[in-house]
Length: 191
Ligand SMILES: [Zn+2]
Image 1: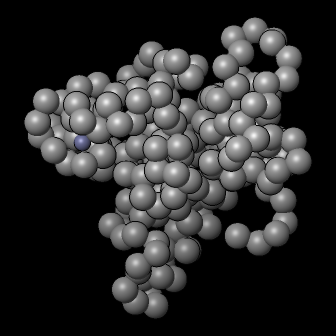
Image 2: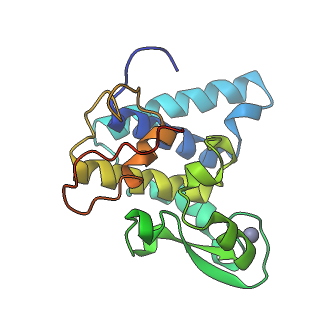
């Protein structure tokens, strides 16, 4: 990404456009085998990004393309693929302000569920976006969008203050656990 500053909304929608393009072409953007496929990929990203920005498509209407991915997802752990002792995992834990809705729920094995604990996906994968399973990425982006919409920070070019929006920093909206206005809670200086 270039150094021009994107808004919170633009960062989320650009990630979503990349996710759609990956799902449509069945590729991982970091390892696209040939030049022509790479061109198609980035062409799709640009096209979907533009349409998401202009609201011609929304994150939910574009999920037709995304649903291919989700099919069959209920039968194995979304994190490791295990089929043993599956439980429901809240992508954004309830304790972090995640909603108790189907869009925040995935199947996870007891072991992954335990090690994920009260972490957001960014924390669980230590900021390595590309390692987060695509199903989780898609739902996570929608959850981030909804949370920033609720907070009125979608058009901010800094989040938190002083930082360029990146997915891992956008997730800090959930780290600030204030149901009402509890003032500044900048306790995560160690990140
Ligand atoms: Zn697992």
